[in-house]
Amino acid sequence: MLQRFLYVTASLFFIIFLSTTHSQELIEKSGGFARLQAMGSNPYVIDPYNMTINPAWAAYYSDFLMGDLGSTNTAFGNDGGGQFIGANLAVNNRLSLGVLLTRSDFGGRFSIAQLDPTNVIGQLNNAVGAGLTPLNNNLEFIGSYKSGNNKFGFGLAYASSSREVNPASGSSTEASASQIGLSLGYIGRMGSGFLLDLAFSLVLPGGTYKPAGGKESSVSQTNIGLNARAFYDISEKFKFVPAFTFQSYSGSVEDASGTTVEKYDLQSISVIVLGLGVSYKVGDFLFAGGPSFTTISQTTPAVENTSPELTATTTLFPSWNLGAEWGMLDWLWARFGYISITGSVTTESAASATTVNESTSTIYGPAGVTGAYVGLGFKLGNLSLDGTVNSDVLRQGLNNIGGGGATFAYLSLSVAF
Image (cartoon, one colour):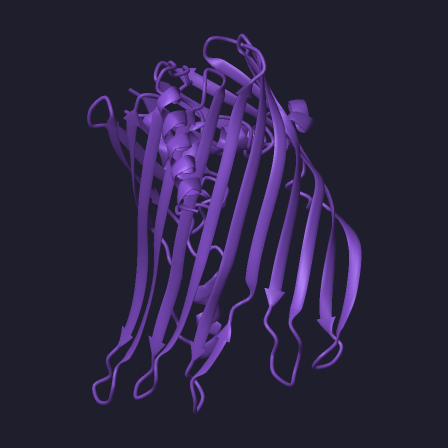
């Protein structure tokens, strides 16, 4: 066992040593969530939004401001959905430090920038009437360090809320919620034509509630995310991009609203995604996309003398994420994307305290998520504005003259300096 450990360790150091002997590729310092969305929510594209998942990407985007203006909630209202802002600054030629400020409606893939992804604070409110304000205004610090062609990243995020009632007489009521997030990332070249992208995220939301003169109730959850991508050069134009994602959600509740403290597990969820994409770039034209396989398992714990353990399994295959972009002018980029999802879901329901009914049916991707996407990117010096175009604008044509509909469904903004 010791010999095997030493062999693996030595191999890893040898690989990292080799990776420092190759030059760093040039990466465009522009983009964001709107760009990826317009390209079919593409997981096979390199973009500054990747910093929210793997903080090691911050090494490529130093001296960079980014944020989302989001999507429209109310016409001409300053309340766009999914808005956030961030900055990443170079301390020296090796170290960069940054900060992100995100809200509860932060979109995209699982990361420490998201708040309470399965709403465990809401479950505590429903169970014991805690009346807690849902978490918001998540503060995240990120950093990256370069060592040759190896990039290492870290991220730390925190958000909290509280509620306290102090009557003129009697005991006080106290409730609090918080979430802490930790992320680690690595990006490195394993030879001249192989780029490895690895990220780990740990998110710990939880809350407590203690009524006047009562016992404390609590909820806690452990959420884990693993993401891995590789960019393997077949030629100067063509790359294979395999991708892997794993997510796990598990937690428990202590309910003291009755005469005794009742402890039970929350519904557990696991997600596995395997994708095989390609990236093809010629001049200012880029095509990226491919199929993926996804399995989502949700397990509801058994309730003694009431129902057995129940499982729901969703399998999605094939799911297609396809996208392209090309430079129409020096300052104008056009984008197109398409999403298609086919799968099945198997659910169990309680037939008795010990037996289950099972049903399986075919499902397709939900309306509003699947289908075609169109986007535009504007580059004015170091400023980039990327938007997902509302497809109704294109369908209505001349009818848009004098109309009041939103031209862009989502907007992202970035500045490189």
